Image 1 (spheres, rainbow, N blue to C red):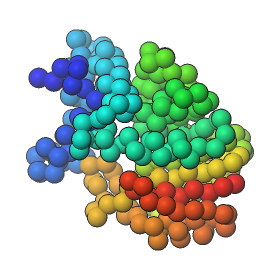
Image 2 (cartoon, one colour):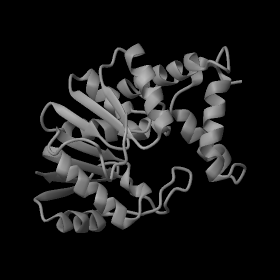
Image 3 (cartoon, rainbow, N blue to C red):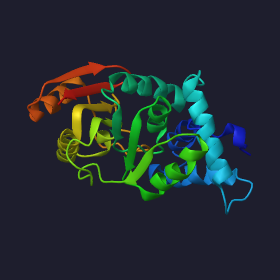
Image 4 (cartoon, rainbow, N blue to C red):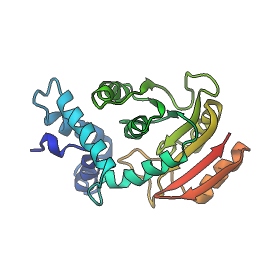
Length: 236
């Protein structure tokens, strides 16, 4: 049995290494299994918000302190720290936010944040959990290739671990959309992997050369760096 105190995003990594990588769980069944474990810890499985709130609180607390070494939170923390360091201005738009932990971090730091994701259920969950965590942010469903927001609507637009889920042409569409939406800066972060992770839905591999080529295709000033993965920063 997994209790509420054990729920955090480390659960995702545990399911991957314990079941998916050993061939005991198909990658396409990962998300369903993850949700089942979280909701199964709820006092009432038909009203599992207590479990989701514990999942959010435990993850936010871990990311703000010292996560368990080797877990998903430990992998996420330096990425989120770097993303915050790269934010220019006060207003941030995050594309592909998933559960929204980076957006929650930025909102807690005083930024005006809009978090977007293509999955409506995830956005709705973040919208319910954020107020209970004391976070003030907006969450909306959006396709990162065509966001229903006006040009230059945010100082910084973030896509942190998003475009590895997309083919090259669609990834370039996302970057072009980010440039339309940003007043000051676009920040793209990707993992560097030896093999695209099927568990996480990755379809592309990246290195600094791939990011450099992406930057050159924009025709804008950019930098490429490496810090727990790769970073493409384009100043608008």
